[in-house]
Length: 432
Image 1 (cartoon, rainbow, N blue to C red):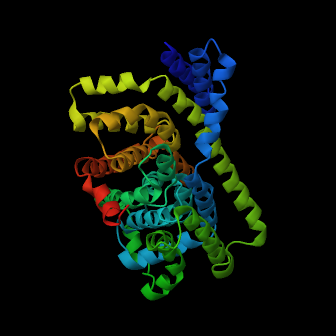
Image 2 (image 1 turned 45 degrees about the horizontal axis):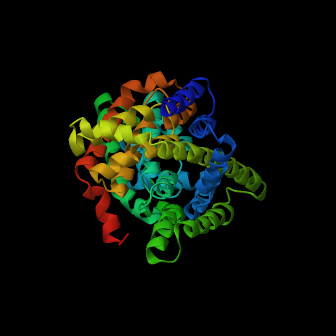
């Protein structure tokens, strides 16, 4: 009864337009009060304790730093130079600019951890370029929105940090390493329909007439941006710094590149950069704290146990249950952002993971793949929303194009479901 009340309150508040963090917190507090009806005031002390405990975790120190990294590199001029270098590598021709957009989004994914920020950075350069080459605006918006979804898979990833904080046994370095191959696989999966659709419909035919940038000159210009992922991941692997320290080092590296090398960031831009990063970080932290109250209620009241029994008794087996969970998360991802999905579903799915003995790192990658698909699947796709706004098209106009990309991404995700080593080989080889 109390469990039903918890989810009813949460659902009603969500439908009423209440922010998801507030809905999670209020639902959890009401459930705690109902469960301790004799000593409500004493029982409610669990709310502030769990709010604090959800935030007082060392890995979360990296989160605001990586958010700041994204804000800095958005303004550092790196995206334009990476695009020029990518064109120099792949050349000109039908389908080449969409490929460039996807490749650049993957590289930027190795610098920041925010899909919408990635979509804004890549879209700011690529949508206009693709329009000049003859690509329809809805197609360009679809490519940029889908490409940005690789951001939460390729480390560093804010989603992986949140997951590692919530799930014992899934360290940040292990999650970062595990996301590398699936992230690259997802990016390559997007390239196939992007190039095929371009050539099938004759998009970008005027692109062949544009000159190809010189390789070495463009490499020299893009080198500072290409070095950032190497600094982050290589530094952690070499033991020079932890993920949190890597984030701080990358902040100073990005400021140096933006202010001293490319000179696209002025001193008076710093306040706006820090303010934006602080606001985003504060929102995420508050939602995390309130979700901690929700998770405490779910775990203490044993609400997740009946769900686990239902899945086990369904007779689906390990793979069948995993496919059902994946399908549900893809659908939910169309309406909620990734962090919210983690905060709601991880407490509910934890018993299922234990029963089927799924590797928590592998399951985290599958969960993130489902979230990534939702980021560019209408109707509430956050990445696609950003790219559509930049291309000045409605989301409905992108549906004929984006569904091809969604289908290809799902195929890549299913490969990781059926071949766990795609996610687990690299962290195991690196000793995580």
